[in-house]
Image 1: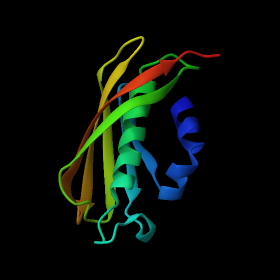
Image 2: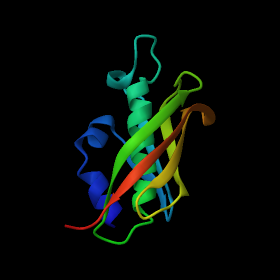
Image 3: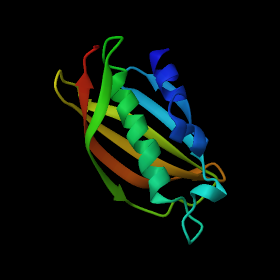
Length: 134
């Protein structure tokens, strides 16, 4: 519930039309349409859309492993763009690779969906920093 509330408070995710499509301990999927307003000059999903939902999916995957009241901040995130984001929507599948008290290592795989066929468009790896309640 806390993850859904946190996600709902992110104005960028709302602007992008993104939603959480799966939420489990240590993994979160976020799906977003490839809107006209989030395309680049060739008509593909902009890398900013790819990165935004990938970062959020990985961050919420990390948060799902922490006790209530905690938060996380991205401290580092690397993206490898593998293919153009061509299709109707993107799905980012974030997961925790290694949980920790001070650092949480995460990964997010982003896929473009066109005619129900998924194409792997990005691989992201990063580090999240847990924040204790104030």
